[in-house]
Image (cartoon, rainbow, N blue to C red; front, side, top):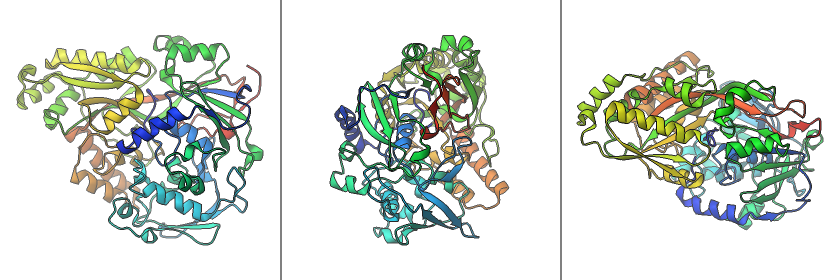
Length: 542
């Protein structure tokens, strides 16, 4: 998932962008409840969400709130983040690993008291695959028989897709190949169950519905642009008895000093991401008991628009990578314990094997640039480096990279800043030369990173298409031999980060949460930084 600034896991399809902005503008309402009541927990969540539609949400600031409102067949364990039963109380997997049979809980209700059925699951997955929905995460369902063919309009008959309702409480899913992480996908927000009754009544504005039906532990109480999103406990949720917090406010704060001031003054309880803390204070803040760090599956990297010359030449892209002193960046700029990355998949990812990309070698960078026709940068056009305005870290990194490229390559870039939604729209439409990017793993497997750069993945956003890469990824994910699979994924990643470089990995994140355990409990550090809200609760006043 695309991280917020800089926190995994993303622009919407261009056809949806205007709708999302309209939704954000229209969500100046209070659905019900008591909007003036003090929230039980207040969270600094980053930028304003673009959407709360599970099929369209890709940014982590969106996905965090979506996870409170909508649930799938599985959900994440609050301690390990591993998939555990959600709307499905149990499942069976066939011996060949190709057939999953999910059994829904006997008493499941939408938040307005209407039963949730197996047909709702099938509808939700069909909607995510429908080309008209333009879901960038539709590929998460491509492991299902004929799902990709339906999403790409090669077949029109959805009954040919391997997901079917067997009665009102059973869903059977047929996969193309054994998929070790399929249950992880069932816990991800894209596969959450959404309210057909509301969507079909008003497809463009269903999120504005009064008493919006939700399948998760919370209801949407209100969404006030640039103020807050408030969610309220859903009394019809199947596990409502164990939902520990009644009202949660999510604040769209991106300025680190503001976030820290709200936290220090007791007006906020949790800061999820490292970028919403002042970088110059990290050395001091990191010594406090409310500063929590942990291993985290997330990578900061640069996207390169390979459709635009001179960036369509791999030698140019290699030269750019070789001229970045990443060690200096993490020591001088980020200063949070991050480690240098020459590959995309973070070290320690399950079922993986380390690929090796390019290091720091300015002399080789100059040689490659000259070979590409730009000796000492002569004739190289001035180009843009796109960042969003959230936080200061992106700008600080951009300035330092700008200095390195001018010093060692003799080329000149202009820093182009945009508000977050406009930045994502530009990136999605390849309206950039080079752009800062980051990705947090949706599950603990290399595929959550490497699948991004398949030719047909909506999150690719570089214009890069490579048949060899696609074939390696397809072959890898057909493997039941994990060692062979790791070798194939390593070959694909080597092509990505050493030979072709539509991206330049910069560093691996260290996870960071900021909260006081004397007041807030139920947050458990895990490698994908996922924290179910119904497990978080307050034990003392602010």
